[in-house]
Image 1 (cartoon, rainbow, N blue to C red):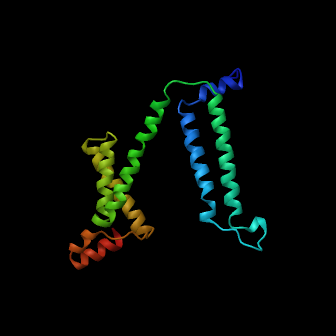
Image 2: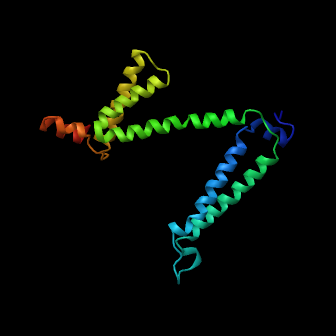
Image 3: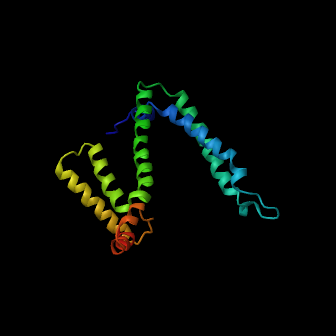
Length: 179
């Protein structure tokens, strides 16, 4: 009852068309990281090899580069599947959410954690297609629960927003401590 007749059938079934692009990018990244090892860590004189600050990072990055070469070779000899650039386009589209996060991080010190979280929860829900009142309420409640969890219960220190400076003293201290 095996679904695959051979190992090659299994690899064909699970092979992704953008694999070669991923392997090239991963190899370039790992070689770049390996090239920076001398700038980021040091070799200390008189210290045993395994205790050297650079030893284990160099070993891990060396193996990362070696396996990236193996992955590139495997991708190069595998049969081509249509849709490589379509898949790469999907990867690039996902960077949109990195941009959303960066804007959110930039907005928190200006408008405050509470307002930024509520606003971005609603905007992301809208962006993902949840565009009716029910989902807007769910997004706001979820955002409020996140703020309460992190600021009040876990007491995570998040910088207060510049907008809080315009609040009366009692409200400003409440917002800085709890929201």
